[in-house]
Image: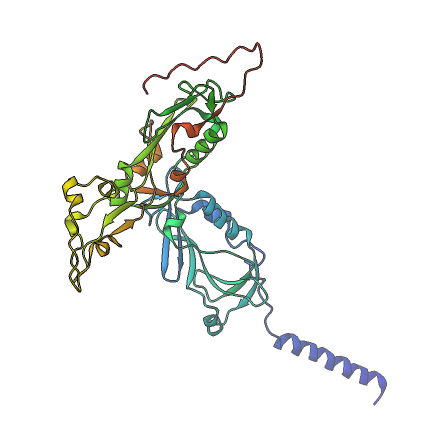
Length: 402
């Protein structure tokens, strides 16, 4: 065969091969998945949301958006939500990006543990705006996720903890007062008159009209008191009729503050006192005190009813019976003091804290009560000696009734 016809045949065969290849090759993908490289949660979805639901381990917590823009915890007495915590969660979801599509195989997706943990945003009509299932952590880092029960699993670098304890989502702040805004503070004591500290300007030191001779208010003690009360937070809540809360209110000390802009707050902090009681008799033993002898520590400290009875000789115990020494031994037990509660009243009837106090009793940290100055003297310290020829500072006027 001549060279030219052979080349023509080869060219024809090559053309046919190319045609067969293009005709039989798989269809070209329509495009890259549009979610890749995008944030898990679009900011526009957050703007449309009126409800956030978190679910994990068969526990669910729901937060609702108010018309005014704030959020409340539906599952915890409608308390205001911790906005910092909510912002952190949203920031994590918006900041994480979809890195790659892991699988579209339904059978493979079953092993990713998708569906046990879910985050859902809904609009005002209750329709889901955005929903995400969180699955296993990936071996190379990151976490597997799925949108709205789709048959696609993606990988993202999201690191988030879904807290489904409703109480943890409530804003625990009861008061938020800056020390520099306080013009007057009054602290009560178990004995004696309260101490009232005032100042005319925020840069002035506090002074008390009834300070002991040669003494002045301790700035450190006043600052500590204002810091403790101004940033008061609750640790737990209970019913208004909870016995420990009722007893705490009856045994509370009060701190009243006034601000330069005319607001005032009265804070009562207390707890049920520790008690010592006489034990009830044990079955089968004689000589022990009966239930009628139950009482408090003050009852035990009272003098005997009559000197004649006290002087009467003790009757020797019969064999097998408990003698007088056995009656005294372990006859009392101590009931620990109850938890500390705070009760707040704001001068503004519409203040949110007044609404909270009408719903629940609020436990606060024990240190709020135990670190309060116990006596008037605890609030004062020796005044520095006046320089020779110096004019003594004027004594603040005695404050009138609040």
